[in-house]
Every structure is written in C-alpha cells, then in structure tokens.
Length: 122
View 1: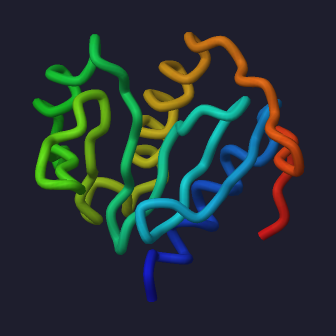
View 2: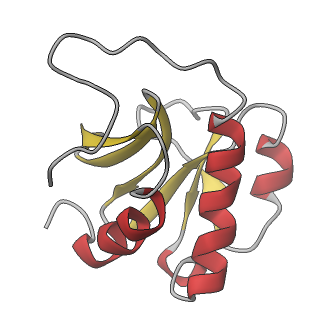
C-alpha cells in the first residue's frame, strides 16, 4: 500500500466540501489541493502538511511533527506527522486546518488543461 487509504478517506471527507478541492498522486502517495496549491498529502502512513515558512518552526515544536525530508533536503514549510498524531479526529482536524489556513493565503492558480480545480474523482 503506497499510502494509508483510511487516513486519505478521513482527510478527503474534511476537504472535499471546500471550494477548489482536487487531489492527485504525488510523492509516491496522494496530495490534496485547494485551488491548485498543495494543502496536505499522505506518504505511507504519515500526513504531510503545508504550514508555510512562517509557521514551520512553530509546527515542528508540536507533538508528532517532524521535518519532511523526501529528497535528502528538508522541505521548509512542509512537516510530516507521525501516525500517532493523526489517530484522533480532533488532532487530525487541527493539522488539516493549519494546511488550509496557509493555502488560503495563496492566490488561486490557473487550471491547466484537463485539470480543473474542483472535485477530483478518486
């Protein structure tokens, strides 16, 4: 299993109602986007959250958060959350809200041909 499908379903249920929602395969897992910007994703059993550069250091101080080092270099602005940090709905919601809050500070991207920002089929 390339990513935790149960966690993906929980994330999808929270983000699907939001305007500009889409998803796609990325990082060997799945990426959830709002208006074309990555909000969060799942790689194996870990939630990846885009908190942005201003909230990055603060997010790393929270329980279960770690540097997201996918390419051999830490990706500033993205943190990975251990499975234990997403088992409770309340904890998952807080992490997702951090990603939503950052993504909403970005201007919407123009959709590419064949990739409208809206509901993506699973």
